[in-house]
Length: 614
Image (tube, rainbow, N blue to C red):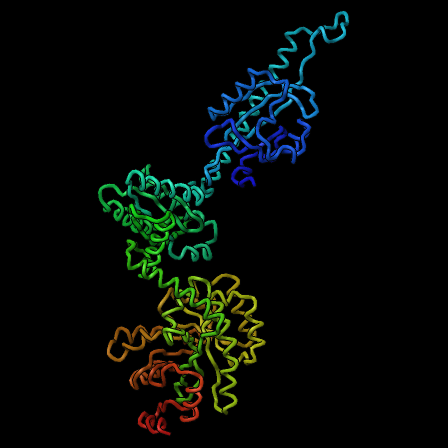
């Protein structure tokens, strides 16, 4: 089978007879034909199946002069492009003159050597002795010779054009079209070469894996043209910071990688990482707009005991993941501890796949209380993983991994499917749970089946609250997600923004979604009793929500002072350990029966314990 990298180098619309032959690595004159075009079959008289698999000697006819044959062998062994005009034979034995051009090609992935053979038939001029004499009509030999030379010059120009085109295609195969950097294919070849030099010459090197932070946000808000301009600017910046001996490649999307010799110290590696982080903090101007996009970098050193080229790249990628988890816009050196964590993460990812198949997730509920009446208004649904060996795991132990491997949407589907039986448990017990709130990932919001799943879930849409994480909703708010939010609202589902204040909050973003409920994150609620600045900040957030006609939920209410102060600030609903920790469905049902749904007495806090004792 001919590799695509070779076929890509053969012009599709070439009129010449073409054949591709795989050459021996030891002798360029030893080859096996693997492909030919239709023009080749028409000229030689051979069918494709008669040619493919044959030795290259099938191209040498019985009438070819021995000197020409030997010259062809010698040129093939030199492994250079050449052309020669020869007398050859078709399959039926008919002799004809042809110009034979051989062009060497190399497969950049496997390193195999190939020959591209181009054949052009040349009209043989008749001699005076061979044609009937007509008085006064003989064409001088000089005219025939000039005509033939013109034809040969034309063919040589055409061959030169094809050779230039082949070089251009080979260049394109190794170069990123947007930035001009090396592409992934070229990088994969080079990393093997660098590792081989490390093993044979001890030439240690570093891999710097670079990923832009929130690049998708640039594309979604300013358009792909702006995103492309940013990528080109990053490529230019990396060229300026690296040495000519370094390899800089774009692997795709917003991922870049640098191969750099270690030298006598790792300081030049850490210095380069520092320079990249610093340079990326400077905004890029595009059509009068300023684009800001930081970067994170993972660094790994290739040592002499390296097992495979993939290992050092994976190590750099692991270090990159660590840098992003630490807050982005920074770099990290790979350590063996990271490797151990990476192995544990891979095991966790494998366990998560099994968990989805075995339905190992359990729903927990935390009450949300009406600040005016003290009655339960809703319950937030929280997922727990009943791990077969590690016990009950909180979301923080697995949600990040689930998001990285694309399982969050599947977990959301499981939660919504299980929610129906949980809600039925409350209804069948005769207790009042007016609404339930579920967190949905951006991937699930983009799922066209979401509306259908809600309609067929058996849960009335007006009892369902969909919570969007404020820390991600602005970054992921594409047209599809925004359209799905409007569909949910039309269905009767309530939209809530969770953890407000922890991400990239803006009034403009709130106006895009216009949620019915705004939840103030617990980190802004817990300090308000003793910290005046935090109290003022929380009050401002509440005022923003109120000015946009949103109901406000205060998270992290743990004391009576918390409850009193946030109620006075204008919060409509309260959530926190004061009213109950997250609990399974049966425990919440029992709690609702015991308290008759009343968890707080705003006017008489002293009655709370009495109500709990009922």
